[in-house]
Image (cartoon, rainbow, N blue to C red; front, side, top):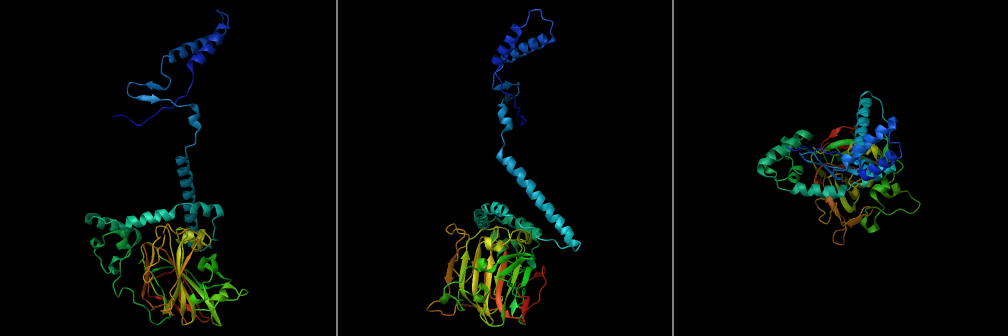
Length: 421
């Protein structure tokens, strides 16, 4: 059995070397007692014996050994180099993450270390949109019956999925990964709180919440993004439930429609093991949809702590409208392998589509001549879904005495209270 070994040898010209050695020998006296004489004689015989062998191949009797030019020893192979540097960088990032977790356990506050422009540009150059489309198609492939239980069981074990809450607990029922990700819950698994005006629209983890200050919103503690970059410029007057602002007013004043009100925000991160549907967080009317076809970078808390304005880079669907206290918006943010964002009442929405380019956005108004109010949503009503996990961002107007009933970092489930007056 042959083994996969190879020998790289220096390339040389024996004839040239022999001629040079011969000239040196002929230039010396025949009976020289110089020790160098014996060295040149030995070299002469050695080169003469090598001249009988082929230049490109040596034969060992078992297999052939191919030679290569000396310069090939110094060529830099790109794939191993990229793998080595990328693996080293990833390992260093994991070490930093481990170190920060240890410091946090000791009660020490870790200041965020933001990615540089070149790091963000390098990350955005990864074809995450293409990979997410491939992942989406893979999720649609029907699994054979014998493979469903081991595949789903591995996912359940990895991400801690609670299948006792699922409307259908039998794993054989889900024909593909997409159906499993979008599984429905039992009717009483998530009771909707009726005592508070705003509930959690999904299962997940609370990243940040509070008042919006200086038109900047926290994506995690200490890392912010621009409210205007996130929502985009205001749409046409007839599409909005609030009047346009004059040029000298700030973007915040365009959103706050009632005197004495403030803007509030809440960010909820959905992990891969969470329930992937999201619901209406309150009674409100959706009047406008804006779709940003952006990148699909990971939105896990570690990445949100590293990349400033991460949510502004990523693909997202912004729903705006009004509730009893004024402006209200819900934004579904895409992520790696979560290019598919579905809004049940919006059949025209197509996310992660190759026909849309990054940096653009497209609008749709739900206010028409036939419907001058928009799409009414009841608290707890089904609104949309992700294919995996991602992020929900709520930005809304409310009186100054609005209080959140939350703690940063806490786990929350759909239907539980976010806050009230």
